[in-house]
Length: 127
Image (cartoon, rainbow, N blue to C red):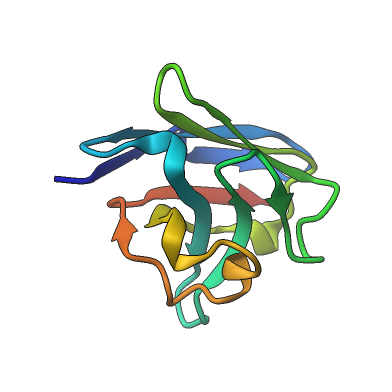
């Protein structure tokens, strides 16, 4: 059974940083496409980072240069380092995964097409 558990959210002032973590279990983590998806109240779900089994990453323009996704295959943990945070980054952040054979290319731009989800961690940025 696939399980994804996020942590690391919180409140921070604009310009600050946070690092989110996602502990994965129940599957061969290294062969999955992983991503971070966020959703703010009243807004559409938005993919903010994706990483494939080989470590290639992708980001939307809204976070490019500020967010960085990485993973530790030995610990089965996915990270999202968020710098220069803005008030518009306020949202619930979810860790998500799909098996490698679902395809990873461009998946960050299809935020509704992920198979496994964590419970989310709240990020609040105050200006």
